[in-house]
Image 1: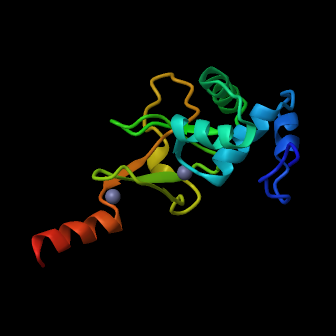
Image 2: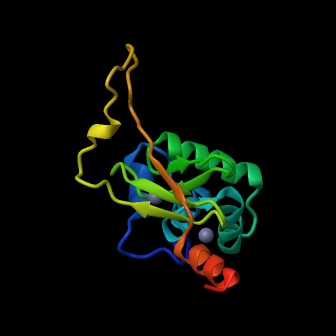
Length: 153
Ligand SMILES: [Zn+2]
Ligand SMILES: [Zn+2]
C-alpha cells in the first residue's frame, strides 16, 4: 500500500496541498482524502478514517491538519447549531446546506441561481464581509417517512 492508497487518481490531493503553499505530509493528504470521500464528516469520523489508513495519527495531529487545511481554503468547516463541526472538501462554490433536525443528516443545496442577492447584506455597517451562510432546517426524507410510519398514516 502506497502513501496515496484509497485516493482516487482523478483528484490530485498532493497537488492541492502544494498549491496552497503547504508542505505535503501523509496526515494532510489522508485528512483531505477522508473529507473528499466523506463530505460533512465530523472530526471523530475523520480521525477514524485517517487512522484506518495511517494507523498512528493522534487526535491533535488531525485537529491541527483540519485547522491548517481549512485556513488554507482546501476545506470548509460548517457548524450547524447544536451540531459538532463538520468538514467538506467542496469549497468555493457558496453552496448551502439542508440539516435534518431529527437525525442530523446534512445535504448540499446548490445556490439557486449562482448569484445570491439574499446573501448580499443590505447594510454592511462597515464590515468587510467574506462569507454568508444559509442553513435550511427541517427533516430529511427518511425521518419524514419514519414519522409517517410511526403515526400510522
Ligand atoms: Zn433525518
Ligand atoms: Zn456541503
